[in-house]
Length: 523
Image 1 (cartoon, helix red, strand yellow):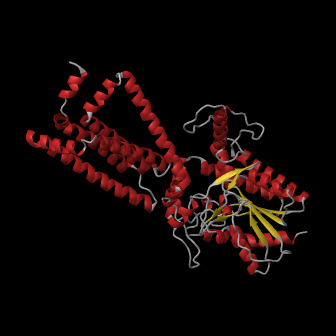
Image 2: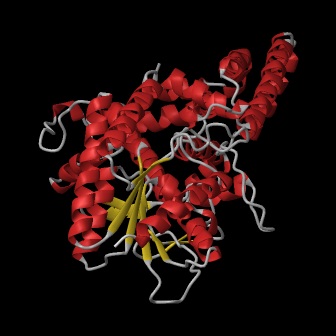
Image 3: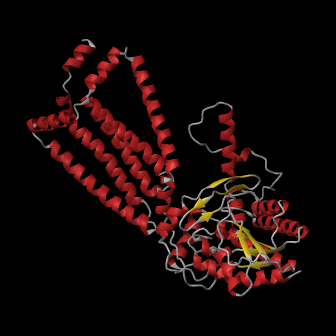
């Protein structure tokens, strides 16, 4: 029998009638798997995440039950009723354009969900993406069943194998185009960053000044703050104007001025994201609160923040040296450090490396491939174990190596500052590990760290012990050790293992005022 004769004899209504139960089961199984995955996903300490998870669990559970009931009902229908139902369904999707449009929309939804929910709450978004893909495949198969005659005819007239190859290539090109357009749309709109910020579960406590935002409002803005390239020290925060966060064209966080006296001493702050003010509004970052306290004590200063998110002490050194080379030397430079040096070494096995050094390797390798004319459809993870970094690190990541590297950078900063007549103050920052009176949320944070990165807490405590002893033996008075500043504070201060709230920033600022005044008084 010819293909044309077979196509003419094909009855979509009869085929759909025979296949209805099978399609319902095919839709029900992914629902059941999704519900089980959501049920087994760990409860989140974040109220927002947990509410979404419970809502999805209930919604998917109801859908699973209804689909099962619907399948049983269809299986018990008489042949006449089954045929009538199949006729009704086929009638609704008889138009080929409508069928193709719905399938295309489902494919678009899959692509958009994979781009939009990447790295966002995987315990609840991965099951959702799995369900969406499965349902897209089931629906596409259902539409193919209804329009099998048209599909078979198209293949027949297109000389079969070559037509199938052409359709496949066309479909892949269409999916690639949709993925590219969606990626560009999300990048330009900032929707991914805002969604990630809106779902950030970390609770914040703001100083009550009558205009404090909610945690969700703040994180929605914070998440849209990005970084850009900066020579030598790798990156700086992009210029940004927001309700709570403002960054100038040079990449410096805005610090309110409390004096217009050009003769007032200048103080520059260096450090990572805690000094930058993650989780705090401009006026309540540590440099801003120090500036306010100095003004209240009739010792106003010109305060600027050179802190950058994620910086280790080596990057602080480079950025500080750049300011000295540009004849931009302050009277006092304050370096707030510690945690990032330990964390970077823990992640990458080498004291002195920056955070996420593998990302810079990936960028270099991707750029090399693109410049050589090779197409790159998605990022990849370069194998950093192949690189010899002995010119910048010993490769050791033990507590002694980490402590010695920080102490060496401290000596280099001190030497450069002395050459330019700049006084320096080093601050070893507090971390949650040293807080004895922890809240339930803070304790869960520590438990999560121990579970996800075993050994890090012990490594950090060992480094702190070595640095503390070295500072005692050093007999210098240019270092403030704030590890234990929150030791007996029973209120919530930390919203993760190292970042602190505006209220915590206030405590740190109060602890720094006297050492800063003492440092400025030296000649």
